[in-house]
Amino acid sequence: MELTIVAINCDLPFFEYLKRELEENLKARITLRSINLPLQAYSEERKQFDAKKLLDTLLLLMMTETGGRTVGITEKDIYFDGMNFIFGMGNLGGRHCIISTARLNPAFYGQKDDEKFKKRLLKEVYHELGHTMGLMHCKEKNCVMSFSNSLDEVDSKGKDYCPNCNEKGKK
Ligand SMILES: [Zn+2]
Ligand SMILES: [Zn+2]
Image 1 (cartoon, rainbow, N blue to C red):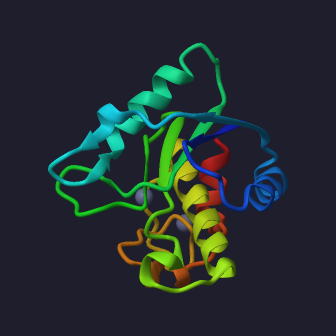
Image 2: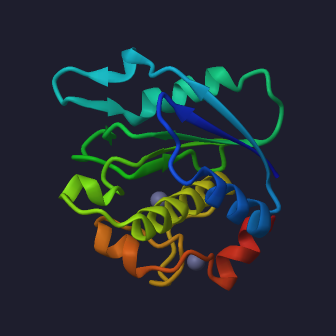
Image 3: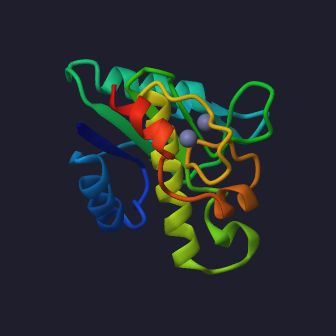
């Protein structure tokens, strides 16, 4: 799969690690791009960025590219509709997804743990990419497609697709 990672006005943490993992496990060919933060996605009221609007920005950016998928990564906190925050969002069966590192970063909680941080980021990338492959949330607790509402849940699940999701994702 062709995969563009878009750093949205941030130093992408652990890019080499992500690249290696994605190349190996998804046979992805990775391109890195960076863009400025689309300020129209900012909600003055919530002091957060609207995930849907960030996705729209990716859509526009990648409009002329045929095929391939896009993962946008921002360090800003993002939200969607009725939720206080989200770790990420992917269009079901679409091509683009967006991930916020804000709350994946142990620094948010006054800690420093790069190992934890990079695993969380990788799991989020797999999870949101899974949605773009048409995968829904999985009941298998250890599957990377299981729904995570909290960091504990992110930390305790595995980074792989369960055999079922793996099979479906290939189609
Ligand atoms: Zn999900
Ligand atoms: Zn699964």
